[in-house]
Image (cartoon, rainbow, N blue to C red; front, side, top):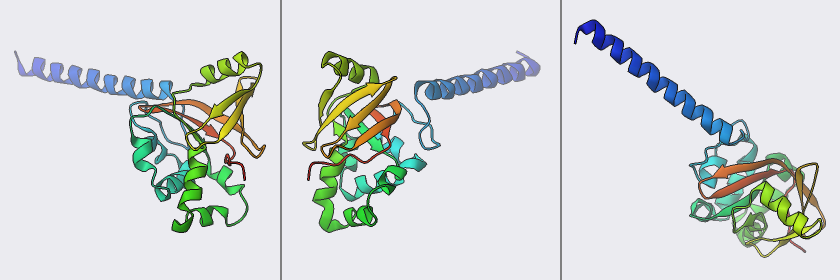
Amino acid sequence: MTIKTTISTIALAATLGLAGVAAQAESHSMENPMVGGAEMFADKNIVENAVNSAEHTTLVAAVKAAGLVETLSGEGPFTVFAPTNAAFGELADGTVESLLLPENKDQLTKILTCHVVSANAMSDAIMGMVDDDGGKHPVPTVGGCTLQATYGDGTIMLEDERGRTATVTIADVKQSNGVIHVIDKVLLPAM
């Protein structure tokens, strides 16, 4: 083999390798929507992906404060309805800061686990359950709350135990241990 042939072979292999990397990156982005300006990878867990979303820094801080990082990094499967920073911002002034205090860990944990379902529930499955139940489906959470799921025009809505409704703004963000659905309100347990 001549030096010219060897260089051509190396160049071709490098080109093919880069094409493979580009195709892999494209397949990741085609599998999952971007969230908070970050690519979400289906082979990473809920926490590994959430920490990269600029729209979920409050949620990540709350998960850390509640001691739920290990749980949500676990095997699952979990469905997480993930409120954005703007959703947390709609709570009464001082609420988030108060919830993040160590003495309020139990209350914070209760609120966060009311956003988690012990299943891998993609949007089509949720809509199917809503249809099966005549337009509204009860969704029991790991926190003991029961949300009411409905949908209209292909968009899922969740009503919490206080009658507040959150809308899924980004659905079906696949994770290695479940799925995230981004929502526009913080879901709260009954008083």
